[in-house]
Amino acid sequence: MTEALPETALPETALLEIRGLEVAFDGFRALDGVDLTVGRGELRFLIGPNGAGKTTLIDVITGLTRPTGGSVRFEGHDLVGRREHEIVRLGVGRTFQTSVVFEELTVLENIDLAASFRRPLWSLLRRRRGVSEEVTAALETTGLAGLAGSRAGVLSHGQRQWLEIGMLIVQRPRLLLLDEPVAGMSSGERERTGELLTEVARDHTVVVVEHDMDFLRRYASQVTVLHEGRVLTEGSVEQVRADPRVQEIYLGRAREGAEDAVR
Amino acid sequence: MTAPERSVRRWQGPAVFTAVAVLALVAAPLLLEPFRLGLLAKYLCYAIVALGIGLAWGQGGMLTLGQGVFFGLGGYAMGMYLKLNDAAGDLPDFMVWSGVEKLPALWTPFGNPVFALAMVVVLPAAVALLLGALVFRQRVRGAYFAILTQALAAALVILLVGQQGLTGGTNGLTNFFDFFGRDVAADETQRGLYLLVAVVLGALYLGARQLVRSRFGRLLLAVRDGEDRVRFLGYNPATVKTLTFAVSAGMAGIAGALFVPVVGIISPALLGVVPSLELVVAVAVGGRFALAGAVLGAVVMGYARTYFSEELPDAWLYLQGALFVLVMALAPKGIAGLAANLVRRREARA
Image 1 (cartoon, each protein chain N blue to C red):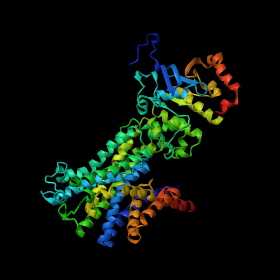
Image 2: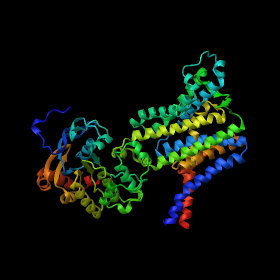
Image 3: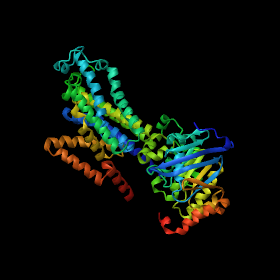
Image 4: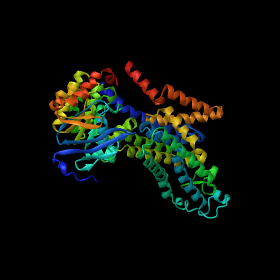
């Protein structure tokens, strides 16, 4: 399927290997040959200006968007061409920029539904009796235990994001992809999300798409910078911040001023 | 909420169910004259279809405008058995009139009551499974799905009408005499049939309620409200929808089979686009988000239909349409939603 890659004899710890990924929407190249390797246990931040292709990259990994070229390998499985729920079952979970929780269900039911995804369908015909250990744990980790019986529709924006993260971790994915988890959050909520992220990253491999530089400085270890559909550079936060090209695309943009921010 | 209040609430549902069951199984047969009891039996058959619509549409978000198809498949399966049973080895009467000389191969197995009764559920469920597998996998939904089901209803009517010798054409299957050893028209038989319909409706209601309250039911709601999100929980929404659609089709099939001995006929006019739509309207009026609302809607609209078509036959269709628009605009949760609001307001005041 994929050609042998002798020059990149990857270390055994690589969990996700993306090679030469290309996505074109009506001629616009959203991704233009992206290579990315994420090792087991890593906490990787993915940054880049608007339109750099960050969300598109996540969409391709999770099966939402089909690439026009390149390969995505996860633990030896080729993910390209698989359907979304199959990819989740292989152990790749994601959240969305605008959180989507099931508003009619309670917080507990949301997490319980996520936790039950490996059960055979017929066994779902029984009613839920009590609360399983892993669901309790996810409620504790996300700090939503006090809201377990509330309908998810009444949650604040921040709480919804935490619920999404709770629904993710209860599935014990081997790779978590979080798309702008702190976008639109108050500073208190950011703080709490950062703590949650650090906790989750302790025993999961996590890729976070984030715009927020301040958040990045505080919680990131490894950073990949995407720009115009390509990987511009990779490294520690300090290395990346010191890179003049990164400064240019970020600071240059910032200087250009308000129009980008408005967009 | 205090503990006694909670236990009151827990017993509220079963108490209402028991009361309705007593009313339906004891009071109605005692108080209603045979003709009125027969009408109620007919409405309860529609209520079974409505229950399935409530499940597919209210809980699963699949607006099915072709439930008459499944009702018809169940009805014809039963009708074919009854015709063959009455003919006792000869050809059914309408075939003789159409000049058919040999029993069509399609009919032969329906002479066996076990096969025919099995087909009452299997045929509709299989058609729904096939349609669901083709359609939901391709992520056809919303209005497209609704139109597709409606087209299916129209197509089945054309098929049935066109095959006079095979299906009885526009007249459908009628003139039944014997129903499992009893005279189908006798009051006694009709009362028994009424009780059977009521018990089947009750059992299916309890089954549907269990389904809704199970994890599968939660999953179904999740699919209704965020199908794309459900994929990223690792579930295949197409499977969930297809199975639910098949269950609702099976219910319609059972309803159709019970309808045949109760009313004495199954014909294309009973299962086309209009009757299918009327049932959806009934479910909307009763309240599609509550199973009890769907059942209630079918019974209420059944009575309204009978009353108005006796009093002002021309106006009924317009009235029905106006009622649908009003409900959708003012009380999208239907009668059940209004009732729930009343209860809540009274509790808040107390």
